Amino acid sequence: MPLDTLARTLVRIAIAAGGPVAAAYAHGCATRWKVDGSPVTDADLAAERLILERLAAAFPGIPVVAEESVAAGHRSELGPRFLLVDPLDGTREFIAQRNEFTVNVAMIEDGSPIAGAIYAPLLGQAWFGGTSSYTVPAPPGSEAADLTGARRIGVRAPPDAGLVALVSRSHADPMTEAYLSRLPLAESRPMGSSLKFCRIAEGMADVYPRLGGIREWDIAAGHAILQAAGGTMTALDGEPLRYGDPDRDFRLHGFLASGGFRLPPSDPSVAA
Image 1 (cartoon, rainbow, N blue to C red):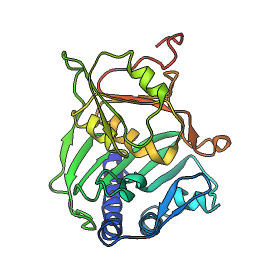
Image 2: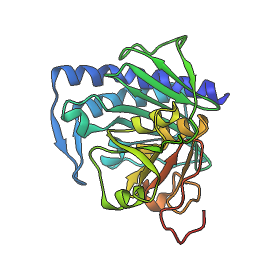
Image 3: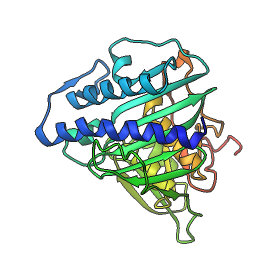
């Protein structure tokens, strides 16, 4: 299957999952706390159920790693190709009644993301990427079946006036702040969820470093979209990010995401 076709399948599933998320946001839903201290809502669970059903129909036999299933103790035997799912990225934003939360789905092959989709239900906007990256308006649950309104997107060159950095609204940390202080910034904007990858991919911002720990399902879809838009995303040492290592339990130490240029490693002693 061509990568752009694969990405279109993923974005239709993500948009469909936005239906129960938007409904739960409008009518309210219960919140619980997982063992790791992170929140989970009924919206997370409803969206994940729908996504798993759709993925099983679209990609039979391909393993799926989904955040809430992993939290419940379910583990899949992974092959060279598998799917990563975050049914509600930005749960804290969702609980706080902010609109910066997304549905994320990505396909991984040989440790790298090859296609991904991100949908922001309350913004009515989706992003997807395989060979190229696109954005499309779509109401929650609509599935945007033909995606006729999709528009190709790409990163921008670094502005002469300085870089626009995007930082986590809910997970700020001193190490990331220290790293940003070494860059020629014009502005630093807080933003929730994986929307930060999308904004860089469509040329509205330039950098998004995260020096704290994160889970693979939080970033894989954004990674796929950003790289298909001409951007760069690496591990903190400048090496390629690798997904699916069972010894890490789907945890990463952080990443460096940027537009049409490469960020220096987080450790200045490491050569770029």
